[in-house]
Length: 508
Image 1 (cartoon, rainbow, N blue to C red):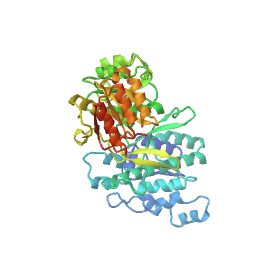
Image 2: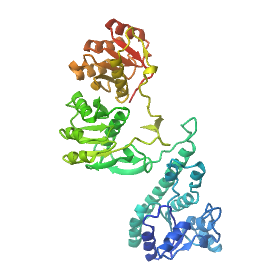
Image 3: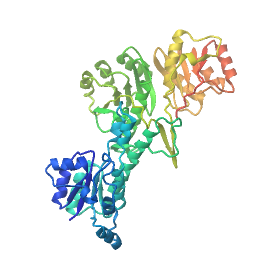
């Protein structure tokens, strides 16, 4: 008669799974609260102490760490000496292990959790059983997710749980314990001065398989960081079809941009660069201004706002094809309007949690880069006026808005701002002067009286001079070029104001 050992914190579907195992002839053994849940469901199950001959002790810290469990799991069925050792010690083979782990993640995400409470939610026996069963998966079935219960029962009943299926379950088991340990390690190093340890793992939870990646020939999936990460990973989808890889990237770029502003802001993003951005007293006005920044590129874009989406704004959005709309909240009055575009994806999202995996990660062949997020905003007090003429108060206001915007544009980046709107954006150019030319071209006559932001220094005066000829009256840039003096002289010669921030905002 086969033996199953069950020890789960998430008891979703447990009774039905155990009942199915009983129908297949399994003897059931269980730990603590799992045993109680089975008995409450009128299922015949024995305590794990019947396997070990040893009671649980130390407030449950010691339950399954015993040869009566691990020998039964690890014994190779193709080795006579292993089976003889079991028999000699009166131990039985364990053929199925169903285990998921203490709720460490849910515990440490509580704002009031103490360190002692967190430590007690570090599972020891569970990972040991899972790893043992996964190692001996040729003989032992290991199940760590309730979503697998019906699949496993069906395969056991039909005799189709072959080695390929067992290996997939084992791989999932190791992924489960690996992610669990990644969370523990991240929590334990929370207060380290150096946030980059010698070894690092990032625990992702599959949110959804995607139809394809950036292109149709690339497979892709979306993983979120934990149960409630905020941001795109925690967004609620209000309407529309499945999210795509590019939808997620563009929605993320747009949402991060608008959430950097305190005032009502709307951004329209294409290919992770804003083609429209405006700040106004309300989102409807901000959307109109953002759309007017570049009416052609706005078609088929992603719209984000940092305020609850209302009906007046929604009425404008549905006038053109928009792939994704994202806001902190979608008001009921807006939902009715957006439903006219039933294929439009609509997301409600909150700012991402600043948790233990709060990194900007980029993969490269053979490795990945990890850095802090660029959260530096605009600080007028730290800016230095380097020209004879200082900015006017009105120019300062626009310079601050432009400096936040240019941080979110691919380098080399130039943004022209006027009256609260990004009237010209030059993104992703190999030459800074070409980025200025593109921004000026986009702005056309609106460049007259605009301010200009550059994500990095001007290596020569030519880029600044091009902006001046277009009508720019004030400039904000990091400074630091060997030709700074020449750039400042060109600004003084034109009678414009220029300030330096001392910090650049490259974005690749």
